[in-house]
Image 1 (cartoon, one colour):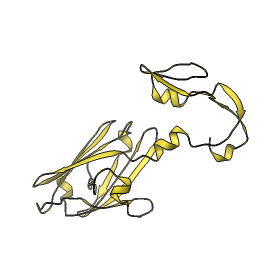
Image 2 (tube, one colour; image 1 turned 90 degrees about the horizontal axis):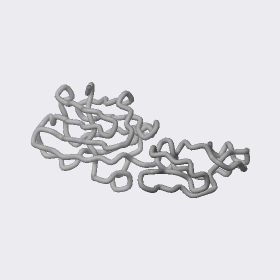
Image 3 (cartoon, helix red, strand yellow; image 1 turned 120 degrees about the vertical axis):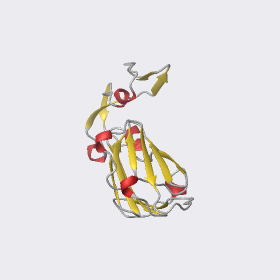
Image 4 (tube, helix red, strand yellow; image 1 turned 180 degrees about the horizontal axis):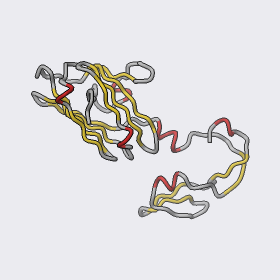
Length: 181
């Protein structure tokens, strides 16, 4: 449960995780499932004192969803690929030169970024499609120039610039605009 539970009595799995032919289970208790979410939430089969270590869930929380960008003369096409996107949580806002996108994914992990765009967009001519695995954005360019890259990407909570090579798989990432539905 975290560092606050250090030293308390707890249930845990002393064995190793096993992934075999679609089944997931712990070597110590052999209760099997095919769902990764069920596997992560399996109660421990042994009792002992809690020693906090980074869990699978905290490792997942540090990941950034994969994404892809292409452009034409008139549009920027941007797709974010993430597992278990909550479509109801997707929120896209912005202006002609700046956009923000946030959503919950992978069991409630918040992804929230802001992008200072390389060129202007026409918010009323932008759109988005959302599924549980992908968010596809179509951003209409305001001037038809080639962007090459989208602009500066910022962590929406801290306001700090995220350098693409450190945090993302491709250079500068585009995101959606105001009132996309």
